[in-house]
Amino acid sequence: MKQTIDLNNKTIFVTGAAGFIGSNLVKRLFKETKGASIVGIDNMNDYYDVSLKEFRLQELDKAQPEDTSYIFIRGDIADKATIDSVFKQYHPHVVVNLAAQAGVRYSITNPDAYIQSNLIGFYNILEACRNYPVEHLVYASSSSVYGSNKKVPYSTEDKVDNPVSLYAATKKSNELMAHAYSKLYNIPSTGLRFFTVYGPAGRPDMAYFMFTNKLLRGDTIQIFNYGNCMRDFTYVDDIVEGVVRIMQGAPTKQMGEDGLPLPPYSIYNIGNNNPENLLNFVDILQQELTRAKVLPEDYDFDAHKQLVPMQPGDVPTTYADTSALEQDFGFKPSTSLRDGLRAFAEWYATFYSNTSPNQ
Image 1 (cartoon, rainbow, N blue to C red):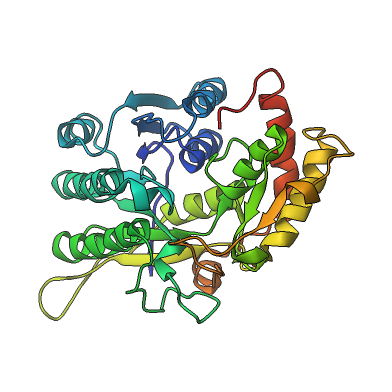
Image 2: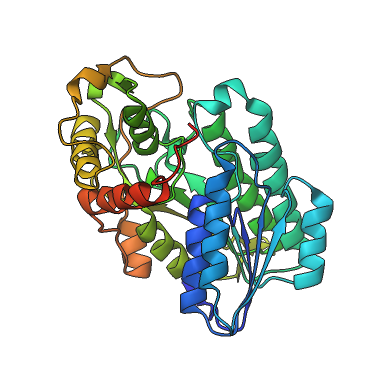
């Protein structure tokens, strides 16, 4: 059972609003909601090129409709006073927590950033939702929680107790923390396990973006696990479609036999349900970069590719079972890899037409 939430005329708090998914979500809410008040927050850190985050914010300024209030706060969810003041001032009805330190490999060398943002930051969000009750807390988890699970496709019913990176451990911790708060304080919460999100103005630490930057510089790209990785690449518009639908369907509050709430708590996979071989992915990316004239037609791709072993913290396959998403919300991501990479290549050609990527 789901509690239907009308997003019109509501206050919606989006953390990570200058991020890849966050900015696309805010843009979508501009189009889909009437009379809503949207509050965004982002600490604008320099984990990757800040000019990309500034670009996304500029795009939001252009897209904001007259009947929608939008406030952007440069702040950190790990700062409890900042989060408390946001909730005290704006009393959000729906919270979407997308702010997090992302990246598997970075967590190996910079664990502090993950503890601050992903654990302390999320704790601050949960506490604020307890003190200023919300209709629905939606938060980003990750396909990385499945670790090295051998059973595919990955189902939310699977045990996920063996993370292979600190990043994955923090995301699993978010799910556990949300479950406890849902149980103790009757906070409707839904966690979303995203599978390899890509698209225009995406994160430069993701493979498709890094490969493009390196090829443009004439560097060699490394394809891990000798090209035998399978990834469930999910186009950002499909991710946002899933998030918006789920925001409007909160787990129903019910009382248990122990006199305490049955936790109004859900977890969903949002993935393409169609894993692609990494070598095939690179081949399509090459074709689309050539088509968009990011790279010349006579570019020698083979001379710039190197097959290497698996990286620490990586997993060989990601593959989403999306049957629960289809059943509960009537939605399944469907954008093809070629269409998605074409949109990225065309954006890249325009965005970097006068400048060079920093990374």
